[in-house]
Structures are given as structure tokens and as C-alpha cells.
Length: 197
Image 1 (cartoon, one colour):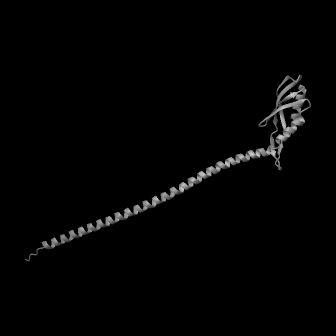
Image 2 (cartoon, helix red, strand yellow):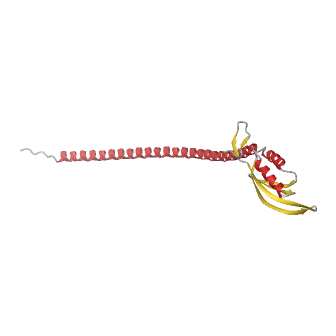
Image 3 (cartoon, helix red, strand yellow):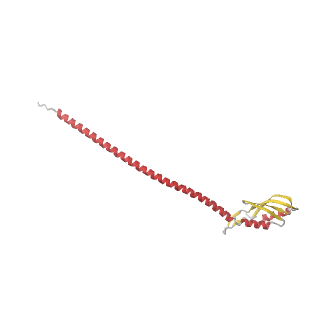
């Protein structure tokens, strides 16, 4: 019987397998390193892109914040202008009111009544003066009540005084301006007519 020694052949196969294993291990390690490098690079690129997007958003947010501040300032200016406009409109609407009031006072003041002061606070006018008698004060109040621009006269005080060696009645009364009902087409305020609803 012929004996064949297979030990060198087995040893060569083992050596070849070992070499194949080491080369595969090295190849897998290189592939893993390349994959790790690729993943690291990809993540770094994504992070830098996101940071640039964040910077862009921060710049845009700063621009929008400045625009919002500008809008707030414009709104404040608009409110101031609206307030000024309403004051001007009020003055425009009531510019002839003083003339009408003085005209009505001149018409409604009877002989023997002398006005010494006229004060207006909003729609209330306070009158003070002297009258020769109480009946003249009553006539003044009736005339003011009949006026188109004045209403609700209210006697606050009347007292007897001596002025220049004459006996007079010093009085204080208040009267209300007739409220504006609506605006006519001409821009003049239409006054409420008394006795009508």
C-alpha cells in the first residue's frame, strides 16, 4: 500500500485560508473605515448646510424684526395722526359754535341784564352777571331755552348786592350747548330742534 503524506498539502491549505481571512479582514476594515469616513463627511456636510441655513434664518429674522419695529412706529405715528385729525375735525365742526353762542347770548340778553363773565367747559357754559330784577334773570333763562343753540338753563345762584350805590341782583347760571344731531352734506352741524324727537 502506498502512503501519501497529506500534511504539507493541509498545511498549505490552512496557510491559504489564513491569508484569505487576513486579507478579507483587512479589506472589511478598509471598507469600514471608508464607510465611516463617508458617513462622517456626509454628516459634516449636512451640519454645515444646516448651520448656513440657520445663519440665513437668523439674518432674515433680524430683518423681519426691524420691519416689525418700523411697522410699530408707523402704527404709533398713524394713531397720533388720527388723534390730530379728530381734533382738527372737531375744531372744524365747532369753529362757528362760538359765534353762534355769542350771537344767541346777545339776542337773548334782555335790557337790564349785564354779563360779567362767560366760561365754557365742554358743552356747559357758565354765565355770571348782574340784573336789575329777578324777572329779568327769568327772561334771560326763557330766551336761552328758546335758543336753537342753547338748552337747559339752570340758575345756580342769585343774590342781592349793592354796586355803585345801586341795588342789583348778582346771578350765576349754567346752560348747555345743544348736541350735534348729525352732519349735513354741507359739513355744518345740524342741531336738534327743541320739542321734536
